[in-house]
Length: 444
Image (tube, rainbow, N blue to C red; front, side, top):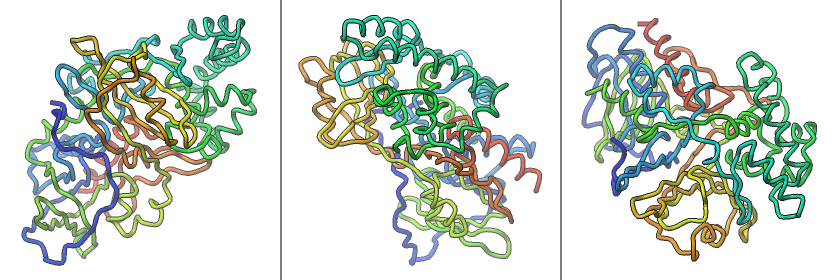
C-alpha cells in the first residue's frame, strides 16, 4: 500500500556521515548485494531470483534500503481516499516497453490510466491552457484580440512541433532523436524556429523540470521531455508505487529497510559493505555488488565510482502538499510564475476530495519567492499546507554529448538506474535492472 499520511519518508539522498568506528555488531555473507530498493534495485533482485530458479534467501541476494519503505523516487502518499504520486508523476506507455511488460506481468495492466489531454495544464503567470491541439487553436484565436497566452503564429509553431515530436520520438526514427544529443535545447530551439517569446512561454517551463537552463540540457532529452507532455502520458490508478510494492511482495525476506549504506571496500572475495540499521552498524560480504542508488550517493559510498559518478548533473527540488479550492482546472500541470528571485516553476499533481477541494502536490523546481504566485492558484489566495519535503536529487539531467555511465564496472561491480541511459526514466530503471540481473545470474 502507499505511504500513509504521517509516515516518515525522504527523497533526500544527500551523503550522510560515515562514522562506523565502533565496528560492526553483525556480519552476513551473501552472493549478491543490491544497494537501493527503488525501481531499478527491486527489478534487478526480482529478475535475479527468477534466473536462479530456486527459492532465494539473504544468503543468495540481499537488498539494502535506507528508507522505511521501498520505491525510491516512485512513491505515493495516501491521504483520505486520495493517492498522490510524490516523485515520478506519469509514464509514457508507448515509449516504455520494458516498464509496461513488467506492469502487465505483475497484474497491474488494468490500473493503467491514459491521462486525457484536457487534464494536462500549462499555466503562465495566472493564465492556464490545456496541452492539446484544440487548446492551441483556441489560444491562437484569443491571441487575435490580444488576450491569449500564445499568439496565432506561436500556436502554429507549437502545432508544427507536435507533429515533429511525434516523428522523432517514434521507434522507427530513434536515431534521429539520438542525433540531437550533441546539441543543447537552446541551439535546437533556435534552429527549429522558436522565437524568444515562445521559448520563454513554452520551452523554459518544460525544460526547467530538469533544474537547468536550456543552454545546458541535451536537445535529445529536451525534445523527449517536451513531447512527453503533449503525447499520451499515463499513470496508475492508486499510485505509481504499486509497481515497486508488487516487486517487493515477491522478494519477501530479502529486503532490509532503514539500512543506510555507509562505505564499500573490496577484499579478495568481493566486497565488504558497512551499513547502519536502527543506529547499529552491520557488515555484509558479497561476491557481487549492484549499486542502484542516485549517482551522488553512490559516489560517496563506492570509491572507485567516485570520479565518474561525481560528474553526473542532478537537480534538487522542494515539494509541498497543499489543500484548498484552486483556480487550476486540471489535475496534472506545469506552471510558470515570476517570484522575487526570478522564474518559479511548479509541476505536480492535484486530486479532488469528497468536499470538492483539492489536495495539490506542488514541486518547486527553481526560482525563489514562490509563495505569492503559488497563493494565486487558490481561490481567495487561501490554502492549508499539510506537508513539505525535499527531492534531492530529483533527476539526472543529461548534458549535450554526456555519455551514460556503464552498467558493468568490472570484477563484480554493477550499476543500475537513471545514470545508465541518456533518458532517465522508469523505463531506464527497469531495463537497466533487468540487464544487470541477467549479467549477474550468468556469472554465478
